[in-house]
Length: 243
Image (tube, rainbow, N blue to C red; front, side, top):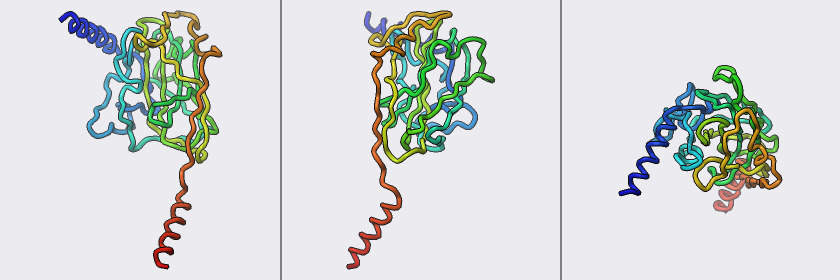
């Protein structure tokens, strides 16, 4: 009975935090977003009207890393390797800014490579939804593929929380290859995560991101067979059948 009461209390506490609604990515369209022009969620899924809420706190995990585990596959954007994405935000409460990470995954979110950090200054100052954005360049050597583009934010002031949005997209680059970056740091997301206290008007915690102890990540994407080679093999197969 006591265990059940504890679970209910934890759920109520997290629900109170998420109901405040804080910040989300608004462009490119986040997974299950309700913003103008966003693709519909997959069959059986619903629009996320609480998309600005955190996914967890330092003491508990509230939602998966991408908020939703089922990817959007229809009407998703395509970006070229080397192209800069102008990431825009729907800002409710910026909580004094904080640390942001932007990462790519080619395997559905199992392995991530961080392609940009914005430390301390992310969402800091007099920011608003109409004018604030962050440019994020896709590495020029990024291989082609269907990817997840993720934004993570650890707020500077307030409850110790983690915010996240994921964008399902395609990258048009070289056929196969490697993408190198840094590991995704999971901070203030459940009792087993790294803990970071409030850091008003400072860059406290930035050493976690710049430390030599932060691991490098290499994502390897195999080459895909071209349409030409497939059509040639089909022709050769048809010829061999005739003979």
